[in-house]
Length: 77
Image (cartoon, rainbow, N blue to C red):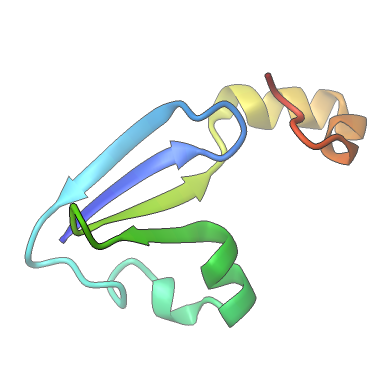
């Protein structure tokens, strides 16, 4: 299983997991609601990779200091 984490706002690569010993259940993805699952995870069959949208520390700080940014389509550019 290949899983890539990236920031949903600035698209920065945050890390990856490449292991046959890790499952969606191990990572807690099976605990997500259907809506959360669709918002957070994106599977690409062509390269058999799951992309996980999260928030990097830079964007988290920026959003905490400027919460109005969440009202825009692209809060961090």
